Image (cartoon, rainbow, N blue to C red; front, side, top):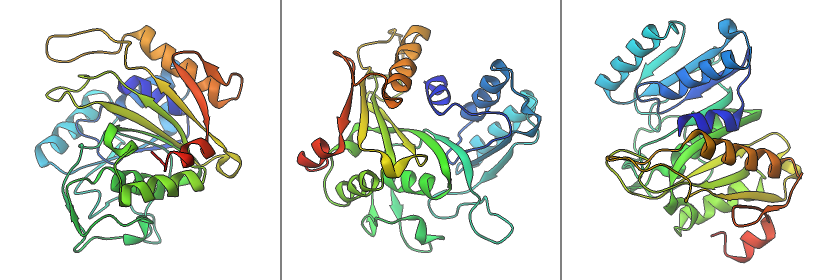
Length: 269
């Protein structure tokens, strides 16, 4: 799963990459490995991560050392309330690529929340679904030509209220580039259906389509969780690159470029 996100955002040598909910650091390690495999020089790669749970943060720090990524800037804290990576002027640091698998439907409260300007669409004062709060944070720390990919529960695609307004906001600005439906059971301990949202600020003003990929039938079953096989990842990445480039408008039964107007007619569901 992690490899799929990395191949979609295509990080390159010299870029800055952030995972705002980094867990034990898998996204950052795979990013470094991908660039090395592509022949890139990783010495000037900037890797940043933030993790709220202290023990997991410690494991991530150790993981970075074990994988010879001692320069990675890993911070501890709640990304929604207290983002830690800041530029010299006190503003939040911006990145070329953002990758994340945030906790699904996490509780949040607005009180004492720093950098509230990150959230163009406010969700309720107290809530149990911080999913699109995380997405808005990622967009806020993305450079004007940056790209992000994040795992989300399916509910973000059709829940109403402020989440509908957030979807409308993303589409009106042309940020939402692709939605990838994933197989059930990919994540340990939960069978909640998930998807990947790909946001791309580069070329956003001219973007009039969203690529939909339905990859929920391609996987290998496991005892505790299911897995994407290399051929499944290749199929997803090929479909994404082909359709976002406009080389095809549809891969029958698997992927389609959907006009934004069509999504609007479905009330942004």
